[in-house]
Image 1 (cartoon, protein in one colour):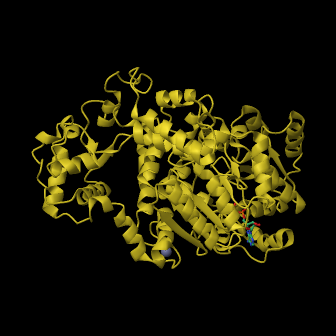
Image 2 (cartoon, rainbow, N blue to C red):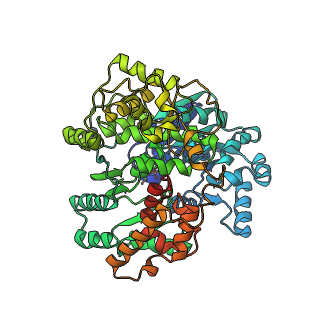
Image 3 (tube, helix red, strand yellow):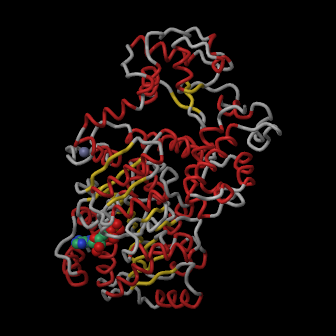
Amino acid sequence: MQGARNELLLPILREVWGYPALRPGQGEAIGAWSAGREVVALLPTGGGKSMCYQLPALVERRLGRGTTLVISPLIALMQDQVDSLMARGVMAAALNSHQSKYDQEEVEAALEAELLDVLLVSPERAAQPRFKRLISTCEIALIAIDEAHCVSSWGHDFRPEYMRLGELRELVDAPMMALTATATPRVVDEIVRGLGLRDVELVRGDFARPNLQFSVSLQSSSDKRLAEMQQVLEDNGLRACETVAAELRSRNFRVGFYHGGRSQEDRCKAQLAFEAGRTRVLVATNAFGMGIDYPDVRVIVHWQAPGSLAAYYQEAGRASRDGQPGHCLMFFSAGDMMLQRRLVRDAKDRERSNEALEGIEAYAMASACRQRLLCAHFDPEAELADCGTCDVCVDIDAVLHKLESQHESKGPVEKLSRDELDTVVAAVGNLRKPVGKSSLARALRGSKAKALRKYGLQNLPEHGALKEQSEASIVAAIGELLREGRLATRGQKYPTVWLPDKAVRASKTVAETDRAKPSGAGKARKTRSAGKVSNLRRALELYRNRTAKKLSWKPYMVMHKKVIDQLDQTRPRSLQELYEIDGMGPAKVDRFGWDLLDIVRRYDSRPSA
Ligand code: ADP
Ligand code: ZN
């Protein structure tokens, strides 16, 4: 069998696709399949994953061994793949909920009549009894699971239906091949177990993207981010940059925008305008589908850091897929991390998400080659040279300087001695409750601030033990201890420090206790003492008046008083929550959303005046 397969591979590749050879990752994956093994193929975005099952599909058909089943979660892109296969004379079809019943029946009939080379199905469809009955009577040559990281609850795209794909095994006697662009060793493990793969060969493509220049910016203010983004856009020769930048700055979009809060039609228009080059910059949330693929997107800016490094790599990896130079800039600030943490409500998910966020933070705060860090995230054993183009490679001093200036106001960072580190750990051991890094650092420096009293920090045996050290140095040392695992984080709103294996006695973390203080758990956000004007409210009014002046608008046009009332009461944490406020339509959210969230974040934690 293996010999017959191998003989057909290259001729079909040339005949159907006109490609002279397989790419390295493809060759290994297809070779393993041909030898009768099951395969997990980790190929970077653009690496040519689909070929890994399309070519075997055609080989098997020539050998009279049935149809290849492809499970893909990207329903919107299925038809594209079908069309492009049909254009090459391959008999392909898709089954998903976007089709009419009539079309679905036609595809089912074609499968039963053994007309199909390739059948694409959504994971939802694959789990349906009707579909299972159908395929149990058909000849299936291969089951390919695309975007296989969706099986992993550690991944960033978990899809519960993927957990059920293993059930196909009971109905079909065909090998499986799992493909993904984002797989850390842990996710690979879950793919193998979740799909019940046997005799697996793991094929890892080359994740290095030498043409991409990764960098991180630690700006937290919107103005500085805009200025820096403009710089990158200009440096990369995007024409009409001045206009684009001016428009970006005044937010008077010739720039298109795309997010889940817009209608289907508006999103479609924004996408088409971008595709046709009528807009040169598209500002989008990740509602802009993960599979959308233009070869010549030169710059990908992350205005805020995403929730994990895997997600970041998949999104940023869409830059310059044609191999030309491209630039990937990520903005990062501690505030962004807090926002991300808040988005995770479920305690079960929190630990994972914290771990993922630590990956992002490590990337942002790194002083080693970014390209190497990214690759090492997927393949810890890879031995890679520095890329020579990322911001660290180009100017490490500048990066170090920026990292240090994060602590500027608090003085330079000194390394603590072994004994001093032990003191920090001992202090954490003596805490009654987890506390924030800065509070702990201040207590160790002997602060008598009132705010520390309520945590009992002034009674800590180690209170004042590190008087000689700066707050920044102690905070940095705590960070180091966290990375080493000698300390652990707890809580969501503000990560607090604690010993790794010690249980927290009270069920609430300090942050939660703090928040729930006067009015009891759960209600704190809704019940504000009447009559008093909160700091948040004042900040919002100020923002409204200033913005109105800047735009020559009437203040109520920026935000109605009722909107301020609601912001003050509900204290939204995400764009989604902003949308839920009456009077905050998509246009307002787009224009003012991040600023408002920023203000809420800054003033929500402060006590009312
Ligand atoms: P992925 O799904 O991994 O992001 P695709 O399957 O969309 O990548 O393939 C990316 C591009 O590479 C496509 O245009 C595809 O036609 C092309 N390609 C795939 N395999 C080869 C090959 N062996 N030789 C040349 N081009 C290839
Ligand atoms: Zn580098």
